[in-house]
Picture (cartoon, rainbow, N blue to C red):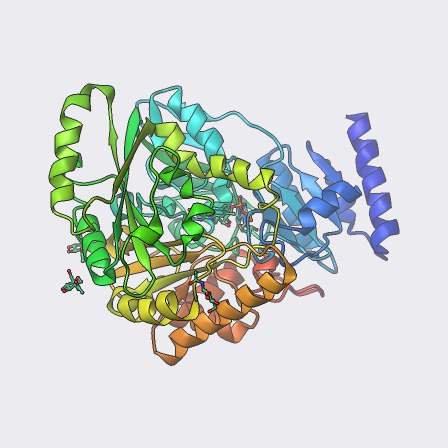
Length: 517
Ligand SMILES: Cc1cc2nc3c(=O)[nH]c(=O)nc-3n(C[C@H](O)[C@H](O)[C@H](O)COP(=O)(O)OP(=O)(O)OC[C@H]3O[C@@H](n4cnc5c(N)ncnc54)[C@H](O)[C@@H]3O)c2cc1C
Ligand SMILES: *[C@@H]1O[C@H](CO)[C@@H](O)[C@H](O)[C@H]1NC(C)=O
Ligand SMILES: *[C@@H]1O[C@H](CO)[C@@H](O)[C@H](O)[C@H]1NC(C)=O
Ligand SMILES: *[C@@H]1O[C@H](CO)[C@@H](O)[C@H](O)[C@H]1NC(C)=O
């Protein structure tokens, strides 16, 4: 304890020296936290950057919280202090545009420590710390033969980070995004209050925080829905050259969301192939070496192919019937003959597939590079126009990374959450997940992203950004549309001094004293 107090005092002293704060908020001096507050260069450096490698902002200090109370104490100190300072929760820092950064504020490293998780076997849910990574949630629940229902493609992301956005993947068409699979949250508001919220309790806060881009509170605990974990996965890819046949099949497959498991797939995604870059692409290990495919050997009028990716989960007991069931399903689809590629693997290996690709990318020095990613929700009625203008137009023949495309049905999204989706019942996610190996590539990809957005604007394609990023409040207002009034009202209520997640650049922090609103 004495050592902690000394460290804290030292940290504050360093803080005064390095940042040149004239008055250190007295509340910060008296924090008395269980965790650690640091101004060490290595901690500050790490909290200044993110996966996107496009922007850097230095915080004045970094906190590794020991408990939810630590988080509450820090935010309360920020709320009470005379000049004010910003506080950002940082999960795994896998944002693209500095969303978890806090310029001259304090970054809370939510994923810095491992914590216990409590699995409620009979009730089929798990209570986890907000900074827990999904991979660790999976490992803990599998001990009980259970697993969460709705995923992201990559599991080295924090629970609080994905729940602040939506958390989408090929299971979304059945279960909804991850935010539709949460029963309860503990949240620290921008006033430093710790509240428990759910469908029954503090309902408005519950829905506001889900998909709320970190604006209304820091998630310290989430209660996540579980299901019996499948043993294995049959993972299938089939190819199309006809875009409308491809989307027709994808939409057909997601329309089966209420069918019994035997009569549908468990996961529906897809991706666009505009070059033989498929071979170099980080999700391509699938096609080789056991499943070699020569893209050039497949005819495609306009140089673009589409790959539908589907899976069926199964238990070892179902092994006898699964082949027939899949065969029957595939017969209903209109892909190019002889382009069925099948893999069979344990459930965990399927869910953790991108991590294995990450290892390969890292070994080639292709992981820690800038990622000018663009994620869009495109209304179903305009997806063919998007194909013509973007996949067959703007992109050219070099993609520099995977381009995912798959549809979702809005009925699986809770309209009370804060996340913004297009007006239509069915919309597609188009994820341009590209890496820039040098500054020229970065320039080109940035330019293409702007071209894509202005193409959509000019053609009247009402896209919404997922993991949104804008530089002006006007653009944010446009993003939220008629939900802006509610969103800004909720902000006023939950975080009147605009302390939280300032890296999203939605609200300018109030760093001068204000009266309590
Ligand atoms: C390789 C890769 C693959 C991805 N795949 C998918 C995918 O398949 N589907 C998908 O939906 N997304 C995907 N994403 C995007 C990802 O979900 C978001 O970037 C998410 O925010 C990352 O989580 P994180 O823990 O790293 O968040 P951070 O970058 O640390 O934080 C993101 C935002 O959330 C806030 N925040 C963090 N923790 C909390 C908390 N506990 N409470 C409140 N606010 C908090 C931060 O302040 C920040 O504003 C992917 C990203 C990468 C890099
Ligand atoms: C593409 O698929 C659509 C929908 O299945 C079909 O109507 C159309 O004729 C196909 N076009 C070609 C060139 O085969
Ligand atoms: C979307 O889901 C709703 C509710 O299940 C359903 O009625 C509707 O037909 C679905 N739409 C499509 C296009 O699949
Ligand atoms: C890709 O496009 C560039 C520029 O338009 C062109 O020079 C090149 O030949 C194309 N490559 C292939 C494989 O089509």
